[in-house]
Amino acid sequence: MEPEPRPKSSPRRRSAPVDRLAAVRGRALLELSALAEDVAAHLRRHASPTVRVSAALLLTASLAACASGSATPTTSSDPAASDGRTSPLQGEVKGGLPSSPGRYPILDDQIYRDRKGVFEFTWLDDQRQPHTAYTSDLKFAEVAQGANTELEVPSGGGTPILHLPSDRDIKLIEDSQAAANPSSSYVQHSYPWTSSWVPFAAGMLVGNLLSPGVPGYYYPPPGNYSVGQTIRGGSVRTTPAPPQDRVIGLRSAVSGQSGGTGAGSSVTNKLGRSAGTGATGATGGTGQSGAGSATTGSGTGVTSGQAGGEGSGSAVTGRTGSSGGSSGVTSPSSGGFSSGGKAGGTSGSSSS
Amino acid sequence: MDDLSDRQLARLIRSSPVLDAQLKAYWLRVLPHLSDAERVRLLGTLRSAQRDLQGES
Image 1 (tube, one colour):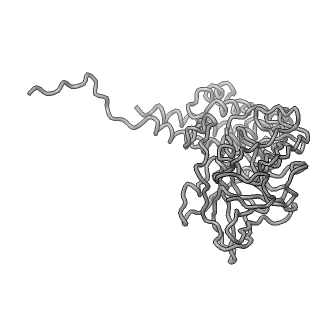
Image 2 (cartoon, helix red, strand yellow):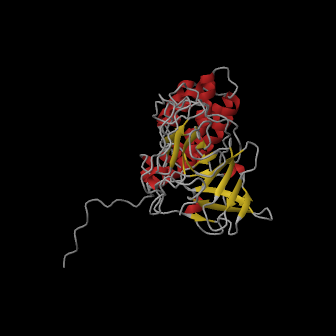
């Protein structure tokens, strides 16, 4: 029997070039992000605003690139995310929540929301011991500035409520690691976050069925957010939104239309050092401004929709904001994952 | 010291395989304002990355 003919070329075994490139990139990006931090620190007081902005943007982009572990920040573990198509949740997820009804303190600087709408935060028990929890089913209730952030677990097993001061922001991240690692031993770490969201915007509840302080389901405006943006407002409902309506995009590419202030958030990199500068976003973009209009839902459980209600611009990419606001999410008759949101919704009612 | 000139560093930045287009743009914008020490660090990191990638063959 004749041996099988050998292939004309037998490629030598070599290390995967992609893996090597990723390793080299990772090391270089880490060094460059540390350098970017020093550069931003000494350029933050430069006379030219363009230089100051460039330094701040360099820092946030460097940290984001580190976070994604790649030199191409739009690449992520979820391929769908690179082109903005994040697959929505298939069902409500939760874990690590308190088992007993009551109110629990929350660590303010560790409240996160990922692209799909999963919230992650750390709550303290009676002994002030921290516990990491995650949930996609969460209501917000606005409390006064300066008040404590607390998680309320209602008796009877209703939707947990996050009592959040009106000026508090939530960090937007790509994917909740707590939800990806639903084991009791998971300990929350500090995410190198990309943007932040302030759910409560002035004027957002005008004309709505919800009164200030009454719990509701809050959602950031749909869109793709860039590094360093601060998004204000969005929509609020009395029933959970459909999963596809909860998805937001997070992109490192700056749209160039960042509008608004986008400032006031410190960036903490993986080295644990706070840069103290956020992207100022003051490039005169087309972020939304003005009060906008709040649309009262008619029997659909949607109560309002407004983005950028404070007139400073919500910096939502692609929005022209001619009316100063976008309409809220109009809900189909069914919301969330249940068989249907109740028509009209009842303020404060917990959804199934 | 010649390597630390804006021109040389800009060339390194543009040709670096570890930086995407956005990071390249930002580094190029702040380049004229970097201190000597920062330039040295930038040069070192970019060259080291290039060497690591080219040296594997």
